[in-house]
Length: 328
Image (tube, rainbow, N blue to C red; front, side, top):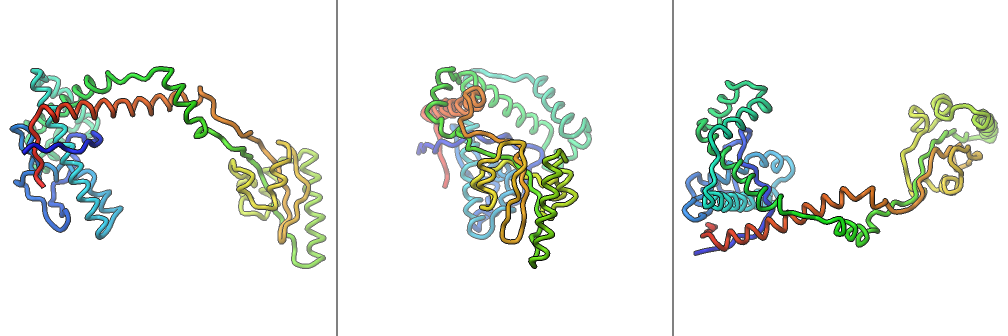
C-alpha cells in the first residue's frame, strides 16, 4: 500500500565516520537490524540503517532528556531519521532516472578531502575508523557518491531555483518593522560608597563622596577612580555596566540615567545604605534598525523560506511519482 510521508526538513547528512552503531532502545525495544522501516520503489530501508543514521544525535539526546521524555525524543528522532532516509531514496531515484553518474575520480577526491580535513591526512587512521564501523572502503565510497548526488540534486532543484527580489526584502521589512525596534539604552559607570551606620560615619562618607565628585568634575578618570575607591561589586571593572534600558536599572538610579547627559558626572545619589556617583558613558536613542542594517538577514531568512517551499513541493512530486511504504 502506498503511504505518503509527512513533509519534514531535509536535515539528514549521510552517515559519517563519527557515528556509533550500538543498539539503541526506542520505547523499550531494540531496533532490529533486519527489520523493515520503509520501502521506496525497490529500495528497502532497514531499521538498522535508521539506527545507524541516528547515531550522531544520540549523545545529545541522552544528555538532555531522561525517562519518558527521553523515550519520546528517541521515538521522534527515529521517525524523523526514517523519513529523511526515505526522502534521500526518492532523490536518488530521481537522480538515477536522469542517468546521473558520478565518476570514481570525483568520489575519491572527496574522500581525500575528508581524510585531509578530518584525519589530518592520516589514511591509516581513516581505515582504522572504517574498520571500527565495520565498513569497507567500497561501502564508504557508495555512501559518499550518494551524498554527492543528493547534494547535486538539491542544488539543481532547490538552491538554484530560489529567488528573492529586492522588493520582497523591502516588503518584509515594512511588514515586520516593529521587530526591528531598538529601545532606548544607556551605558554607565558607578562609584558606590557604603553610607555608614552611625551619623558620624555617614558624615564622613558624605564628605568622602563630595571629595571624589570634585576630583571627577575636575578631570579625574572615572574608571580608575572607581577601581581605587568604589565599594560596589563592579569596582574591579571600573564600575562599568553594560548597555541597559533605564527602566531595568535599580530605582534609585533611574531618574539620573534618564536625564543625565552623556559624559557628565551626577550629583551624589543617596539610597538607603549606599551613596552613588554615576557617569553616563553613552546613550542610544529609541528607534528602528534601518533597512540597510537588516537587509542581509531578511534576505537570508526569505531565501531559506523559499528554499524550504521549493523542497517541499519537489519532494511532494517525487512521492506522487514513486512507490513509498512505511512500516510502523
